[in-house]
Each structure stands twice: as structure tokens, then as C-alpha cells.
Length: 66
Length: 259
Image 1 (cartoon, each protein chain N blue to C red):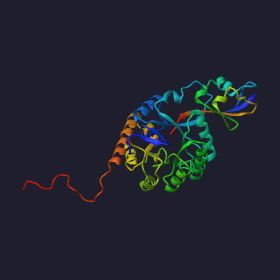
Image 2 (image 1 turned 60 degrees about the vertical axis):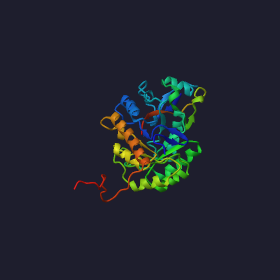
Image 3 (image 1 turned 90 degrees about the vertical axis):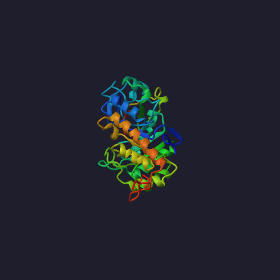
Image 4 (image 1 turned 45 degrees about the vertical axis):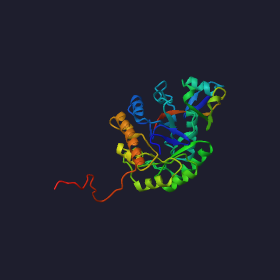
């Protein structure tokens, strides 16, 4: 299925969870925040939060700033 | 008055200097500059992960979060909604309620959008955030932010990154006089150590800067200079300066002179 990940189309397997998505893109869950269709996915829910076709997923982290 | 501690929302920090983490030549210089600054709070921005550059170094590999508290910002947000959304993501990423709230109203000056700032402050306070809004040097806006539940107000000294130092000492002085009970932290516009010292001498509770250090010829030295300036400024404010007078007053005895 195709989801929109940080504004770009992204192929993910059917039934993928947020956790699985983070693993495929090589991210440790401890330092990121995830939003699915405008709602925050809390860290405790990553493993059971199922993604669906066309979901808009944002994965953010901290960068240098003032 | 305590020289070396800044209290925000009941939590006390070991420095009155808050530093940013942007614009450094590299992470190592940033790390050493933060250390030299003595800052106990450092600001960070929230951005999308760049999926084309996986496995690169991450900012948090270079910040000892046991030593310093992260203060995420909402830089780059032009509406209250964007800022609230960014703050919620920041809370999730950093597991802390602290947020430096920016709602920008103008691209060229990066001056805050007062209406959006107030709106976002109200929403975030209700959601339990400790809101530190970056604001104009406008007393009325500062009062409204305080009344809306902001944990501090952070008026600018001059435009972000300008290095101009305090441009409106009267406005800033009025805010420092009138806003009591929450800290006033001057945020933006500090160019060099004397600017920081003056901010603290005027009675500010703290100062926040990024470019003034990160953009300096030697950021690590400048970080140390800022640390000393903030300490000196605070000590002078506590000591109480002498009144300004138009004419000379001799420092040496005027009696017992050789004739």
C-alpha cells in the first residue's frame, strides 16, 4: 500500500504498524515523534498503531535551532 | 535575588543563559560552545526527518540531556495552528512540556504575530504546556501573555539574528518593571557580550541567544564571554549601580592636599 510519508509517497506492506515503518526507515523510536493524519501517535502505541492506504504520516525529530 | 539560578514554572536552572543549537559549523563546536556557555537550557527545532539521508549524525548524539534541558521551539510557524501542532510533536519527541512558542508574522523581520501568539498560548496552556513565548518588546502584549498563563515572557532585544543589541531600552525597561511573578527572558538580537550584560543589568531574569554565539568567529570563546557577561550583568543588577550624575565627584579626599 502507498502512504504519504513526510510529504512523499512511500510503499509500506499491508498491515504495517508505525513501529514497523520506523524500523524499515532505520529510526530508533526514542527520538522521534509521529503524526498520522494530523493526530499524534504516542510512543506507547507505535507497536499497535496500524497504518492504512493513503495515510499521511509525519516523522519529525529535533534539529539545531534557536 | 539569586545570581546563578533561573526559575521557570517552579523549576530552577543553574544558568540565566539559554543558548540555541542552530547555525554552528559542526556538532563538535556546538557541543563545546554549549559547555563553555554554562547553559542549563538549550533550544532545538522540530523538523521532518530527511529520509534521503539516513544513518547520519543526529543532534541529540551531541547534547548531554542529563546535563541540559531541551527547550523545543516552534520556529518557522506562521499560524497559531501550525505552532500548536509543532508543540504537540515536540512534546512527544522530547517528553517534556516546555515549549518556546514562536508564531511569526513577517518573513523579513521575523517579528511575532501577536494575535496568533496569544491564541496559541491559550491553547497550549490549557493542554498543560509550559509556554515561553517569543514576543515583541510590547508591554501590553507581554501582560496579555502573562494573563493567558505563559510561564515567562521572552521579548526581543532586536530582530532575530541581527546582533543589534537592545534597540528600545525604554520598552524593554517597562516590561521588566511591570511584569512580575514570571521571568522575563530577553530573546533575540544579542550581538556581543556587552549586549548580554546590559540585558541582565537592566533586570532581566535571563537571556536567550543563538546566532550571537554560533555565528561568532570563535563560537566557543564567545560562549564563554556570554557566560561571564550574563554573570557580570546579574551581579551588577543585584549590587545596585551608582546614580548617573552630570558632573564629577572626586574619588580621592579633597582635604590634606600639599600646599
